[in-house]
Image 1: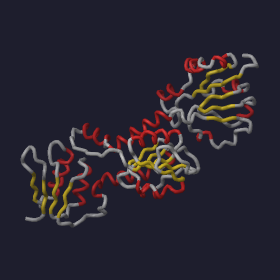
Image 2 (image 1 turned 90 degrees about the vertical axis):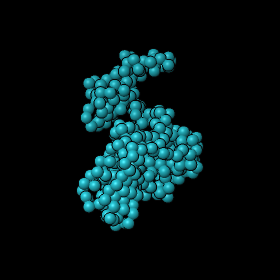
Image 3 (image 1 turned 180 degrees about the horizontal axis):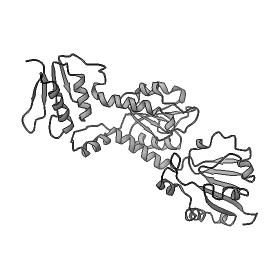
Image 4 (image 1 turned 180 degrees about the vertical axis):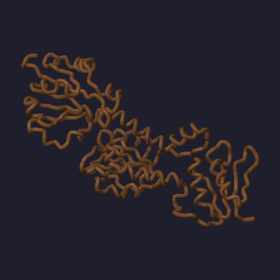
Length: 356
């Protein structure tokens, strides 16, 4: 190596538990190899003769190589004492979009340039976001689960047209998805820091106005980085403000949303499904059950309605094994109730009554 060449230190990271890459596959996909670097370098023939580079792993040659490095290409690296270890360092490029794992940034000297790879996954993120929302809209996860359980239930859905989609974060990732979803006729509200206009949005508001649009959202799409402003943004209060039918997709940082509360909320809604309005046992004269068809859901519904004089329902049929199992258990537990079901193979109706 000669002094007139720009030296680049390329630092790869071996996978380890609790960090990134989180497995061998991730290590393979995120590593900068010689073949990869040379293939990219070949596109810029005027640069190749002006640089030298070393591809390293973790701390193998960290101190010895960085003492005269001009550029660092990496994801994670030790920042303590970096200015002394690498006195010639002028530019650090992070191979990911996120840089919060390197904060606080008091180690960055004034003449050091720090860049990231924000936006390089915009096209893929837009496709993934559209796919996720359409899967929720068309109940694909329930269809897949039902097929695995051999429960063939008719699940109907409407087009995405005119559905209200609130997109928090309208940069390259959020903007790419907005382009796709708006072309299908969805009504998109963008949420960003300054309230700047975004193509494909019917309106755009600032972060501090988000509470006004959450209650009307059919889908909430999160595409923001982790900052002091976004951390904990979708908290308990805001999750409760959403309709229980609202679909949520988060392609940003997990810290933006209270996942523990969301888990509890989803469990509660799942267990009660169409009976989420029931806070305790009810004593109605008549109730008709036709909610979700899983064993746990039907069992919960019947438990809430055990004092109803006349219970009617549908789908008591071998095609819905979970449903049948829950109803049979209910009848065994409450033998004083009169039970009747349609005896024909094509029938699936039933009723359970306390009235003689």
